[in-house]
Length: 221
Ligand code: SF4
Image (cartoon, rainbow, N blue to C red; front, top):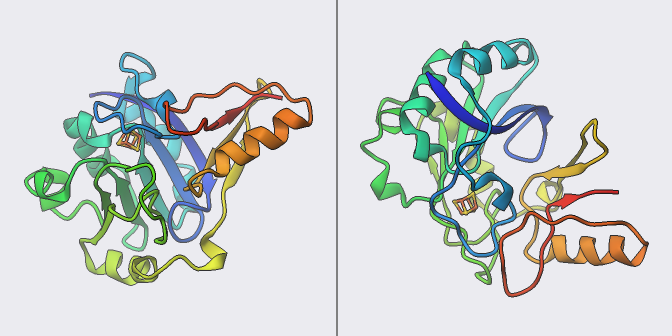
């Protein structure tokens, strides 16, 4: 089955507990103003197959504590998402966290949700300018749903206000020299980082969506 992805990475340490496999879907129909992942909105890019994705992440599964699926909007490819979740040869201790911009109430009939394939789900769109006091959330309107016993066990601490040790971002370097970030930045962090790098003479390319203040999520030296 075909699937469109933006990126695969291991380890990701800022999108759930432990060292995780990160799978970013390509394509988002929701398009929240101020989204820092606007590079994942376009359709028609990153097309591959579910089997190829499973082959790519299988070696990482030997070391991973869990898998985080983000985007983009994973439920824009609901059938591919379900096929991927069923095909991943994960152990019973490896949880699945999925981010969606849809309200949870519209997702409850999705097979990947109703059949227990997902342990924890963040729902609802990012609302720029809304308070941001909760872990794994870009804005406090977004809800964390613990859907399985494993989800409850591993994500209970993410239901309480953000603790200092969860305020972090992973910084990755691609072969072409570009730098990218994983994690949930504080609102305005990307603007502050961009301004700092600009002040130091770096060339900055932004892929962020228009917002009330400019943001940057991709930084090219
Ligand atoms: S925050 Fe998520 S749902 Fe909203 S535009 Fe960005 S990728 Fe899409």
